[in-house]
Length: 149
Image 1: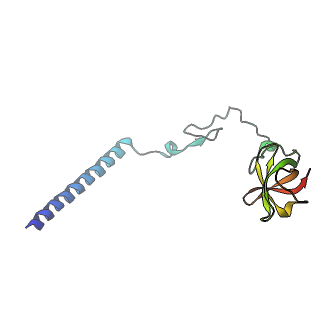
Image 2 (image 1 turned 60 degrees about the vertical axis):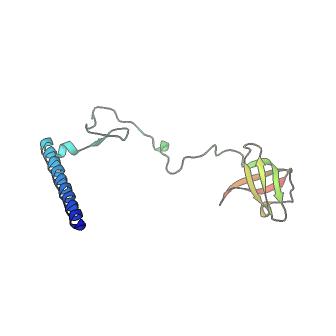
Image 3 (image 1 turned 90 degrees about the horizontal axis):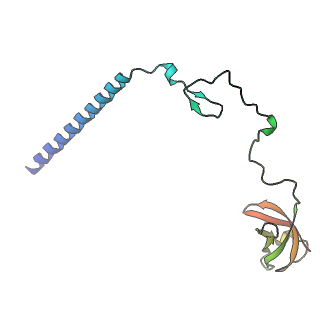
C-alpha cells in the first residue's frame, strides 16, 4: 500500500509542475504580444567613430577622423628603443664549468641572463666582468658572444 500512496504523490507533483510550466509559457506569450512585433528598423544597430554600437545612425555632417597609414601598427607593438646598443655589460653571478652553464647579471637592467658554455669566447668564472649580446631563447633571454672585460 505504501507504494501506491508514494506513486500518487509523485503523480500530483508531476501534474502540478507541468501546470506551472504551461502557465509560465502562456504568461511569456502574453508579454511578447503586448510588446508588439519588432520592426527591422528597430533591430538595426550602427557603429560610431569609437567602435561602439548605437541605435542612432551616424551624423553625416560630423567630420570623420583622419588616420595616417604610418600610424597603423600591425602585430605586436615595438618594445623599447630599437637603436639601443646591442652589447651589454654585466657580471657573472654563477658559472658551473662542469655542467657548462651559468648566469650573468646585466648592469643596466639587473636582469639575470642565461649563458651556455658554447657561447663563450674564453673561459669565465664567478664575479668576472663581461660584455655580451642578448637573444631570446626557448626559455627566456640567452647571452651570446660573451667576452671578458
